Image (cartoon, rainbow, N blue to C red; front, side, top):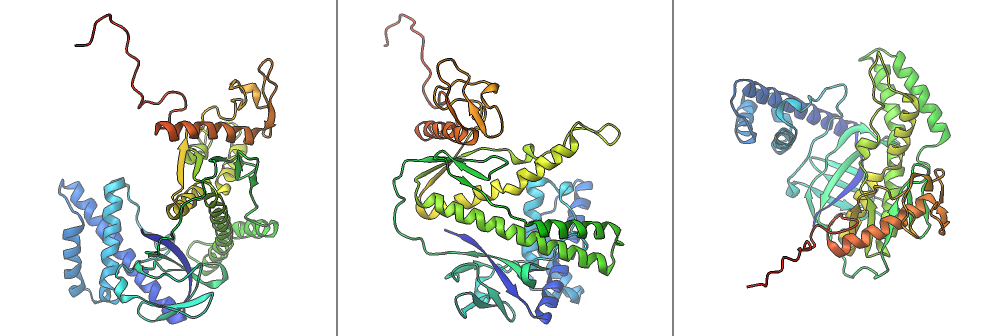
Length: 405
């Protein structure tokens, strides 16, 4: 079982210059190979990874600057391009701009990588030379494919890297606690059917002020200037801290949830559709555009997809099942009697059933979590996403009066 880990690399100026050179060469190979694929496509011909990899070896003999980067890093660039073209189409894959693309590359050969532990927090890794790394967890025992260093500075002036490792699988079975359901609202990131609310702010008030000032400075700066590059770097440093807090929150909540539950049920939310902009054009804009933009920022700030990935990652070690159900009408359905109407949810936080003789009242997100819990039991029993009758159940046959032969 493969697992991914993130570390921060403390590169020397010479190592940082080497990484930037590798990233620039990989960017050039990407753009050249993409243009070659598009030219072949216009002529009705076909081009894929195998002939491009062979032509890359010939190009290295003609252009000496290509030899500065490792061959396997350039081959991984062609593999990434081949995968992107197969998934999205050759003419929909984007160029890698020098100004907008953050230089990165990948070392796939684990035999050329050495990892040495120096302490609880720090270690060092050897690609072509030793570089210090701030650990984000235990040191990997078996490294499969390695890091993807990015010279763009992260929080604390360090560089990010992603590792693919093969960690030992811990023994043990998940605690057989009755399954519960997680759901989220814009006010709170995660709400469970037990009434637990999990959420925290990921950006401070001071960082919001500084980020807005940097945005104003960026709008006044000249494209390609050194001041513009410094402003973008400062903005990225702030947002990297925000992203680290969000990732830490998702990892902690996922570990806490999976450790004591054998089944976790999530809403199958379409984040891309929920955070789409208001309809309209420049000449005739849509209604409540600014309000919708604020709602989109609130939705994306919660990191629901990142929490889903964290739950699925941790669940691999404990055997916990992660199931997604259709969230339709879960916020309008009464978890006590099943009555569904739009008026049941009086506000963002208040739910009161309008059915005669019921009058059930609860927090709106907790009530929705209970409905998703019931749908999760149906999923675990039938094996599909049906909330009423499973499509895997045999249909009821009408009586025809004939006796079976």
